Amino acid sequence: MGMKKYVFTLDLKDDPQLIVAYLNHHSKVWPEVIEHIKLTGINDMEIYHVANRLMMIIKTEDHFSFEKKQKLDAANSKIDEWETLMDQYQQRLPFAKSAEKWVKMSKIFSLQ
Image (cartoon, rainbow, N blue to C red):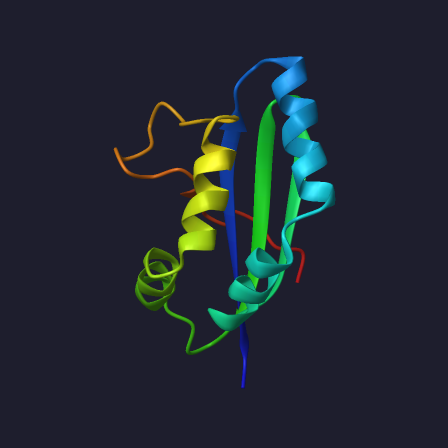
């Protein structure tokens, strides 16, 4: 089976204390959240940070579905609790759709 890669971006509120708190949460992500991410079909996830900008890279199997992941997320109260907690630090991008937090990026170059 092949592997798919997705890249997303999101901003944090431009407040140094909130940014530090967000980074601290991600140094100790709840075990239930980690398990749920794996359960949804995500094989690897990395989040990068500079200033108040975030970039997330997700690697999945070919059969991964964001629709299925959203259904699983909605049915998990611990994920809802985590997302509510994270929401206080996150700032929607001006061009994001109304319910969209992380915005999918398009690849424009590859060395390979």
